[in-house]
Structures are given as C-alpha cells and as structure tokens.
Length: 291
Image (cartoon, rainbow, N blue to C red; front, side, top):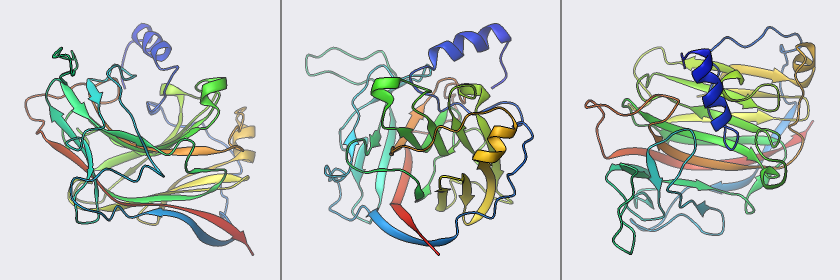
C-alpha cells in the first residue's frame, strides 16, 4: 500500500490486533534461504472436504464462525454466521460469500457496515506446530475484495499480535486478481513491514479456476506454494542473518475469510460485483514423517 509516512504510522497502529497487510517493499536480502525444504513424507492428519447438504454450516467440530461487526484494518464487512455468508454448496465446496447489504440486528437496528461476509477459524479445534497446510480455492475478483487463507498463533489471547505470529499462506487484492502474496508477521516485521513475496499467474486470474495454495513449515523454515510452484522461502538461519527473530515454534490455527474494503485494496467501486464468492474445495493439514 502506498501511503504517506504519517498515514502509514496511523494505519500500523490500528493493525496491532490483526496483521494481514502485506509488505509494500521488497523483502530484505538474506542468506540461508536456498533451503531444499523438508526431508520426509507428508502424512495427512486433518482434512475437511466440505461435503454436505447445500446450505449446511461448516463442521462445528473443526470450525468456529466469527460474528464481528467491527473488523480490523478499516474493513467494511460485517462477519456473520448466516448461511447466506458461510455455508456448504452441496457440491463439495465451502462458500464464503460477501453481499452488498447492511446487517440487520434482531432488534431491527441496522449496522453501519455496508457489506456482510464470512470468516471461519479452527482455534481450539485444529491447531498445528509445523506441517503442510493447504487448500484448493477459487477466488473472487473485484476492487476492494480481500480473500485470505492464513494462520495465527494460538497464544494471541495472552501475548497479542504480532507477538503471537502470523503466517499468510495467501492473501489477494481483488483489483489485481492475477497475483497473491505470501507473508509472515512477527515483532520487528509486521503489518506493511512483513516479510512478503508475490506470485503472479502467467495468464488468467485466480477467479478463473481453482488453485492449490500451500505452506510447508518445519523448525528450520517455511516454503510457500501455488500449484506446487515454490515462490517464497524463509529459514530460521536466513532470518537471523538480517536480524529478524523466528517465533514460529508453537501451535497455530487456520483462518479462511473474505474481507471487503479496508487498508489492503481500498474499498469496492462501481465495477465490483456482488455477491462475491470464495469457494473452498478442501483444507488439509499434514505432518512430516522424517526420512
């Protein structure tokens, strides 16, 4: 995001509860990031392929549905647990849908947020320290849409953000639907100073078809993938070479959401089409069985 330094400072202060804002500058040079990656076999320990009747909610044994009328990052959505915002489609997909509407409370009061959408997470239900975390997703395009698949440290309630750590497996600005960013946030490199790399499709957009987004994470480092293409590598050794502290040795939980508006891609304009849908075919977590 290109903003003045003053605006940047104010925005950074507002992000202390959730990062999810990619770096606007190239990541610093480091050494040790020519890592060959994990050595062993990935063994699946969790999968949700979202099979179920149309209109049913995601499995409550695995997922929490957020209800939040005051999201972070100056976003304009109201997160609900209504099937119109988060539900299975009956064809093996989870649909996270953003609608152009004001949420109406049971009392008849109307929310000031001009959109509704959905956000789910696995906090307290499916958490992992290290592993391969992947999902097959089709994304929406449109100015102001902000879909993401990411991880937060399970200690966020005690240490706060960014001390808990955040790993963005991907986030996408709807105005540039042919590119996604993979990032990591922690003290000293968070918000717009996150360690970030971008992946850009050779042709088409992420709204045209499903793609597989994955993170491989061990005690030594992380690798980000789109459709088995590695585009970002970070190692504990490499981070130490640039004076960055690695804090990613504790459990994290999974988040899927479709934000609308805010600091990342600005607000929707007249070209943005609603409803906007993020379609998730599956989410999978695997553990490494070393050679």
